[in-house]
Image 1 (spheres, rainbow, N blue to C red):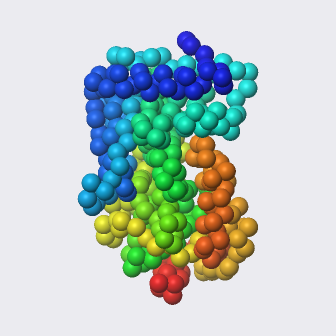
Image 2 (cartoon, rainbow, N blue to C red):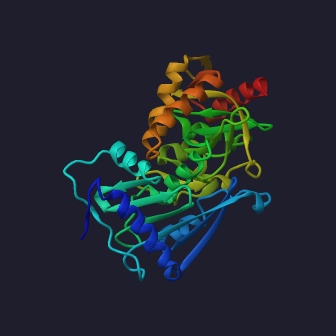
Length: 348
């Protein structure tokens, strides 16, 4: 098995892209997904990732002529012309050093050591390759938000940002919900959807700061642990037999519970940080920009390979543009949704 060092990394990255393009005719499956301003064309093998690409996205409407196209090859050695993935050859590996070396060559990339899982992207040519040991040798989180890193790199090159946050909205106006796992963000999004509010996604949304703050949908996946799934009444609505994902959560899709089709965007006017409170009723109080930044930036930067400096600048601007609040959650999903609805109605 070949070994790659920091010095040989750019050459290896270019080699993977060349190999994938040369093997384009050997990929059994092609999936085309229309996203905001982007036509994503994925070449890959049959299996779980091909299935995920057919389910995990909220496809955009509008004129495809306004979109740019990017091509991603999801390969493994079982596809003729695709090489064995290399291992890392240096004694040490840092994500920052890896990203910086590729950036110097005009490339972006990510390497997950445990699986020799490579993702390389050329943002100028809008072509990328994901190389794995086999068709199913991907990290467990990949099917929930497939090709997330490539979308991050493509949109970051345009000044936009994939953001680890949920959304709720009313009449086209909305709030971002940010926070670490367990803060109640996903439960709040689901409670809002079940009580008539809109959302353009939970977990990851696309944020554009070009004209105000606008959130656009990418992924359709929602998740709840079994207790939250039951507490929110989802067992009766969706059935109790949903399989558990790698986090022990039940996975479903926004169109299964949304009161209406997902909007193309929400104009965001506030940032909320959910917090599990000790009161039966919810409350919404202002917090400092610093506290909001602490809730928003770490996970948003850690979960998006590369672009660290631009990420901190982006989230700093975001918390500067938006008033920030702590949402202390009450005990009832309907009551929580009502508090957010009242806030949205006043803000809208």
